[in-house]
Image (cartoon, rainbow, N blue to C red; front, side, top):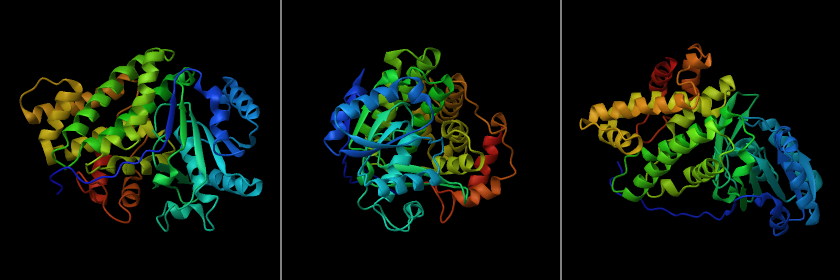
Length: 390
């Protein structure tokens, strides 16, 4: 067990350009890196809102040649990544501009990793090899959620095998990310809720640790979680509340850029458990996390009741002297928080039964048990799914 702050190296080369109207300068930012790019995006929302036109105008003014690849969906698909790799190779593209949320950014990172690689891009996700010389990626963020705009990570779903796996490399961090909170104004309230659950979960994965003497990041984690709780409710109530959306956009970035995990052992069991859930049922990642996080908490809290009591007191302002009661109250407040955003907190609420629990648990624990706060094997994971059933 780690007993004091761990050694760490922090390298975050992403240039963040934050604020109103900042997307109009994307052409000049891209020009610093490339003149021939792939413009990668999701559905039709960037065209309906006028964002596409502003981006194209800026690229054309800067003399940037670009090919387009739209159609990225939530739980981004390996087939789309392979299509993007083929397009990059055909057109001699050396830079990818991701315009969208986490799914678009993750798809862009995977294309960037795979384009120079002679093998199959899926090799990075099955850990057969590591990312060595990816193309550069730039971002215009439209959804506050995944934190992929500044992180080294990506998650891709392989439709053929039904697997949802992650890969990571500091080389995959975007070279710049443009964050304009106004671009989130047209999001459905459910999307804001999903994103808030996702960023909150990213902090949970770092906060529950066996590492001691990490006061700075403990208190940073608690502060960002409190901000997410406050501002997500405001943003769901009024999606055009600039101040609330700005706080959420920055919170989502900070939650997953690595700074909150410095010097501490991280967990990530809940994410791996949820990845099997969303791979099997194609639900939104945030929807799955709102169910899995409380279930995981109920299963593991006795491993360190004092830490869960601190969580209840410092994040949700639980006034209870007894640690056991404070811990359980904090878990209950977590469920109430997700519910206040309109999210389900049980699998039954999502219309999901228990028929695939054994299968998903085996996959989650393959090739080895998951989690660092508490190590979980397939048997443990089945029990967490059952707790999540409701």
